[in-house]
Image (cartoon, rainbow, N blue to C red; front, side):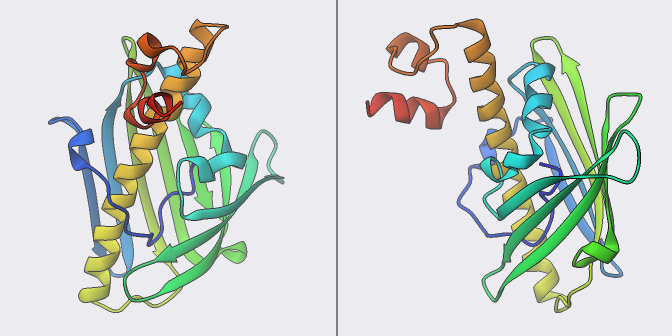
Length: 213
């Protein structure tokens, strides 16, 4: 899940999934993109962290990732995550390679730094802050990224920023959905979505699935 930030497929998402005090900010200067996202997730910290650190299955919450694998790191205590990404705008689609050096800091925050010689990016890093907030979680994502491929100025940059904002929204919604499902399963050993009363408490896509059974 640390692999979410590139110039991604524009997807139909609902921005009202974010509350009034949540925000997504994406800016660009001198070819470097800065990203800041803060959102309240309706699931506990344990399950949000479980979803974010499921690196081998990052495609479940980010549809632009077409392949992901966890690799050994030369740094003790770290790991590396390689992802193959399909990055699209209305003008072009590219397949990109990205390898991140991932570490868990003493604070519990998760830091991912791009390994440039193994990636289609000059540089980049991302920090996840997963902060307990009662039975919810404040999830903060801060990142910078410098692609090694050409993006046309002005129009291309605007498309990239708009695409990233939409994909980030979709990804955070999927994080919440996955975390809530994991949480529901732990609460109930007989978990299932056939139970109509239980389905009412699930995220919207899960409720649709339950209703169709």
